[in-house]
Length: 100
Image (tube, rainbow, N blue to C red; front, side, top):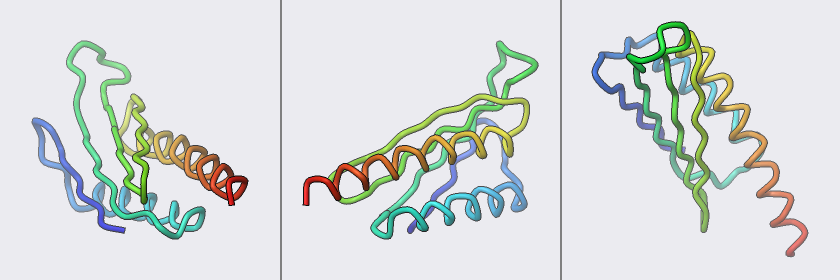
């Protein structure tokens, strides 16, 4: 799966990018035909406590999945987004199995 990380209005360090890539690689356990993932990391100026936003769009054959979460850290937001995407991937794979 091809992964691209975009940090909006700040520079993400290599450690954070590696963390995100490792988390997304785990999604391939649930579906073997994931094509790509686009990650957007943003800072929310209006919310001081949970001001880190992670948005991830995963592309698979015939479908795009999307999730967005906000947390006090990018690592925590990424964990939550990947968990939401994992549920979506499993649900999509289940529907595909039923249709076959």
